[in-house]
Amino acid sequence: MSPIDFLIGLFLMNAMPHFVLGVWKGRIPSLFGIGPKANMAYSGVCFSISVGLFLWRYGWIGLTENGIYAGALAILVIYYLTGQFWYRSFRVEKEPV
Image (cartoon, rainbow, N blue to C red):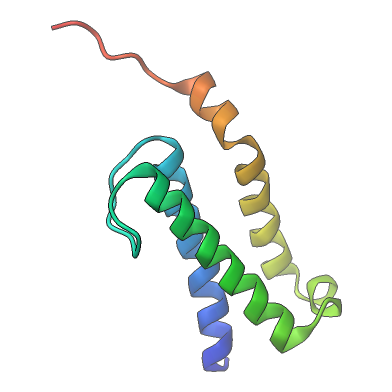
């Protein structure tokens, strides 16, 4: 494994928790701050870096040859598209004290 492969995986997997916590209004430190919008923006940057590095290293044909990356990328894209739906569907309202 080359260092570039490590960075490709690192940035792709780092995008998921920042996006999830951004959608769910969680607070986790990121490069852009602690709030939900900052985390979603940071997730987008990590996602873009990962895809950019992958395409630079392997090209578009690499997506068809690398099933692990294609699968992880598909899961992240699906969550990007459906994250708000899952948040609204499974949000637990706080009970009054």
